[in-house]
Length: 443
Image 1 (cartoon, one colour):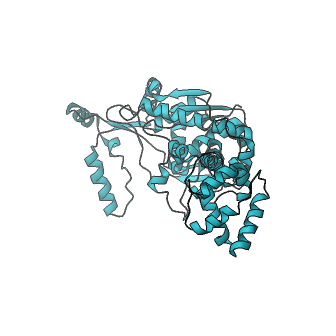
Image 2 (cartoon, helix red, strand yellow):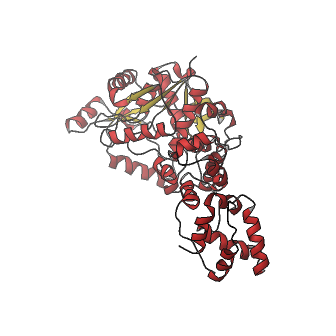
Image 3 (cartoon, one colour):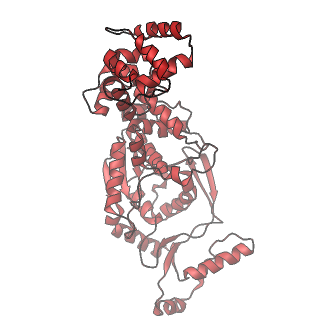
């Protein structure tokens, strides 16, 4: 059996952390099993969907290195959904309801005030044909609900294990709006059946949807036996609480602007919340070889930006220089320079600064001009190597009696313009005598 997965974003906004994680999981599963990965745009909401968001979603996935075998637009498949709806109407699963939003809200509040769950009472099933005709004659159009079988729904979840879900307290879902347009459930079920989807991987906030969709699938087809479900725990913040709106809404552009590498982000979101160590992978093949749904924990994973930044730094530090050079996109960078600075690089833009430190122009910071003047007088001339800095500092120490931070920090600030960074004994041979003199003179 060929494994077929799908990622189904609504093109009503940009991808964010949560659905990026879902996209990666679906792509990796199909990739690891040499299956098929489908990108399906849930664009039945014509008013809110846009071509710009579709283009943005595709661009974001490509930036992550994710490709797909097939691209589907639900807006092109309306006739299929209508056929399925007609079948459900004929078989009695879909029934028309004429309550207004105000009617439903009144009923909901009444049930809650009585301490009861706000479950639809199926009063529309008791309408006579005459009553229905009167509603429609007055201009009221029905919405259509799916009649649930109030029994226990069970399935084996690939992450959560055996699931038994009672939908006694779930209202019959509305599948078709008053204007005839479809809500999420029916098109999704029809697509999963017709496209032969074998695995549905999504967030655990869809568990209730899964119980409902299993019943809709059974009403249309016997293919429920071929679909496996997996529900990923939702990301949380450091304290285990819900992600802030800012964090949860972060899209690819944020990580691009921040300097996060695509495969570092993929690696982080893949291993976060699993029994595997979070480690950088350098291509999708390696990542998919290390991906297994069995390793996903039931506990909600905690997303921390500093952890992602640390992984990005490790990704860059361990990467072959050829990959770094390609990512930097500038042949001026050399491997000698990279070896010196890489332990102090968190994102590639950091390399640009250290290049300027070594070969360009920076603004020295001199807070103790008298001390720097003494250091300048003792600066060795000629060609420098990794021993030069140590010999220089030894002479300064003998002359001034300084030690520790008081000895080293003013030199670092004057030579690099920063209080931290690579060891000066490695930097100074790259900077050279002339630039060092110029900076100590603050020129």
